Length: 65
Image (cartoon, rainbow, N blue to C red):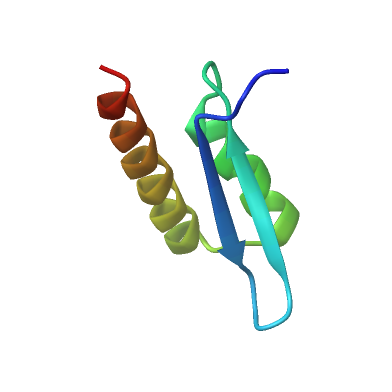
């Protein structure tokens, strides 16, 4: 099974933590868009989430070489 290149734990409120898993060929924009619709996130929250994912992916990329 494919390993995710990025796993983010998102605390939605005090109670609920969701995980976002990003795989090699995933489009982070699409993942954030779907997650945002599912949990009714503001566009501001989605933008922050996308920044976090992109930061994580860049860190992971640099560690492979």
